[in-house]
Length: 264
Image 1 (cartoon, rainbow, N blue to C red):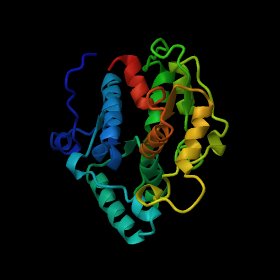
Image 2: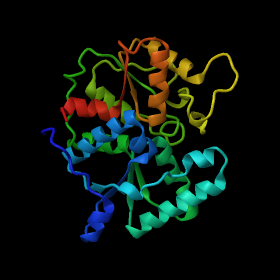
Image 3: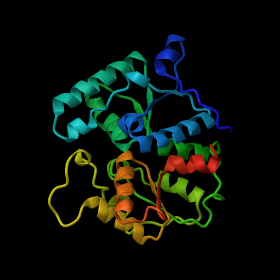
């Protein structure tokens, strides 16, 4: 596949032509505004096109899910944002949603139904692993051969929604040198950004959570820390910089690793 500019389908444009994609790809606030996570969105979008997945984005009609507002205690703002999104989803007859942020995945899957928003919600790691098992996504371990990789479980993928195996199956297909942190899966430590902690100053204590979790990762000796969440990526990248290891240790999202493997 060449590196030409990819045309991203927008839901309103397709709907106006009488077309309905299988999936709504929910980009999320980080994917839309954070310069680092925009790269993850681009990588995953290239993979979707490569796999010929039927999808579209909302574009300018996409707003926040309301997750940060609810975690911070502003229930009214959350419901305002959620009901607006549900109205838009229903207008476009959305049935399936792909998310790249675990926070978006969790709130769509587990909390929107209380407000009438019932959809089939798929995390991108679930979709990618399904394509891998179907043989449609063919990965090579050649690019990362001999490079050790560890994985940090996002709270809202792991403990909250039991998505533990899919990212590991993908990473094991990409490298023959996958290593676990001592605290992993259900016992993994939070990156320190959940529960709206991302948006407030640190509280008093002996050590910040992101430093503790970065130390977990560094103890594995891995050269790549794989993540699957924008919050986790921010915190672990900061942790690597705090430890002055950014020249030798890299933090990549799973979608970026796949895109690199496929040379997209």
